[in-house]
Length: 193
Image 1 (cartoon, rainbow, N blue to C red):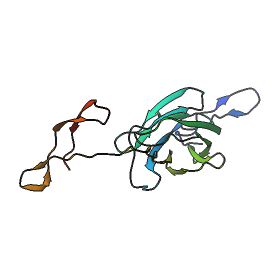
Image 2: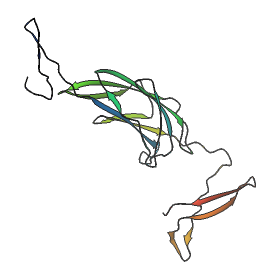
Image 3: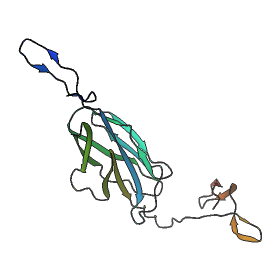
Image 4: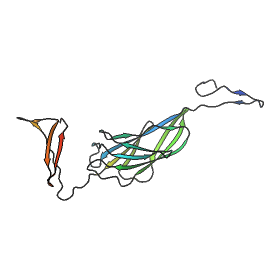
């Protein structure tokens, strides 16, 4: 009873009992969404946009960055019990199909050694979604399938190279391309391969 981190001094009362309050540290967790190509799990996808319904019913918009990762705000833990988080894809990365169904995560909050910790699992069978945990970070990896091209659709990639040295690719080139419908499109080659 002398550990000041977990116990407060008791209060004297008329019933010869001491009132002791046990202090439990607060905790928090977050959700990390990782977006990958269904056929190449090493290929991370940027600009996927998700609506995440938090345990308190509030909604957050989470967009994956250039590394294919999006993270929610921290979720505070103040008591044991269960939280439910819903994740619905609102915008797929360019060239990919929208994930047809969202996913639901059940988070179990518990106390271990005076600190909050969590366990998490996907609710139901959710194809193309996997869940792992890293400390108090829940990581869901969501696969996306490429859209099929319409008949007559094709991709064109233009690469600017140094004259006399085709292995040296140049960044920042500006191209004007006339599309089959006659419209001109201006594109920049912003990468330095």
